[in-house]
Image 1 (cartoon, helix red, strand yellow):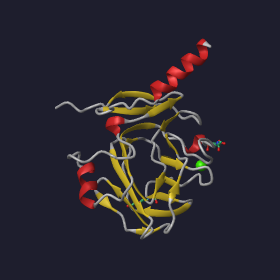
Image 2: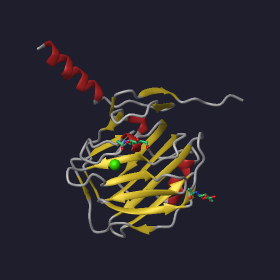
Image 3: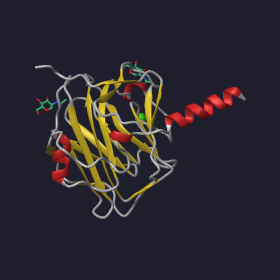
Image 4: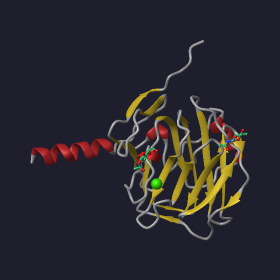
Length: 224
Ligand SMILES: *[C@@H]1O[C@H](CO)[C@@H](O)[C@H](O)[C@H]1NC(C)=O
Ligand SMILES: *[C@@H]1O[C@H](CO)[C@@H](O)[C@H](O)[C@H]1NC(C)=O
Ligand SMILES: [Ca+2]
């Protein structure tokens, strides 16, 4: 009974939104278990934008943002390929690749991906630079129950993690919207100017649960 009560309390705690301004998630170890699960009540999307900032020294491939539904493990996925020149965006298990947006190791990067089902186009923004707008999937929607995971790439709904696709490093400022942001809004995010928080996921009111060794730490700022 006590255990049940404790479990209920822990679950309740996990659901309380936290303001993570000035914080980051640290993924300090290569595992096939450690991850963060993000919770939202929104379950149906005809358009999305997801933005986050990350820091890593990985040159192998890894997942940056993994949204799965029971039938589609890659219903919305941002996936970095090995080497440094290709990042894939998957929608409804369809993949499109964006090339030539290489980013250096050991420095913070801002990344956003947009998609809308009317045009079917996805676009990837890296450090203020847009990609070509490319077709990935149209006329469909992302339909929950959704599970959103940071730190691992889902090959099944909430699982199927591969240690060789795990993320090691830090992540911050994760936001998600149910529409494609305008280029101006994306620039504002990337340049740390004022922007409207995500209405699906907001770093300023994030409902999340960490599993395994993931730390919530103060973002390290450079002193002048
Ligand atoms: C990535 O592109 C750069 C030039 O932008 C090139 O020098 C490098 O070889 C490419 N790396 C890979 C792994 O393709
Ligand atoms: C991960 O990569 C290492 C080194 O390339 C390899 O030895 C190992 O078998 C891989 N593990 C999985 C689960 O694929
Ligand atoms: Ca995988």
